[in-house]
Length: 251
Image (cartoon, rainbow, N blue to C red; front, top):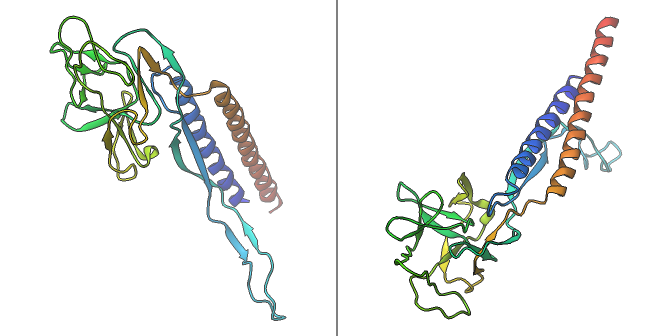
């Protein structure tokens, strides 16, 4: 019966992690460029009392076995990089990446990070940057006066710089470091930089922002599932404890 206690405890821990992921998704439902996280579970090693395929006395093989599962664990939290909702702002420095790709920015320590947040600003030197002042790479400078940029399929007065996008072989392998930024890892692969609209990269839409791809209804359904699973596991612990109590009283 102690095995049931520990097995149910793993279920409660897993559902708590599920609730934490849901809470973070809901909290970022209005975060520009936020990508939903999805939790993945794996069962733990089962205790085998009888192995399938074991040789029996009659020279035949055991068709089925006896395995008692020992619970569940959180295997991964996967970022879902589906397109977020397009939000029209009319602001010239707002851009939306329509399709695959990230903007590349330089952090304070000189390292590179990547973002889908297209709410851009201009610093005191006229350089394009994020809300935190991180410079877009390669750098783009806006001269004083009318802002004019070149967009795919459009003709403007002048070109002040060309925004480049980068993509990764496995974007779900990127490390989220906060501030709407991601960091390259061994799992993500190396960044590949190119012009928007080329080699599978998305297009850039001016005067738009990409909203979060979190679907609040789906998160609420997940919340109900996690809550009920947590409750069921807690009842299993209570039931196991009661049976242990009865067993102890019989001794």
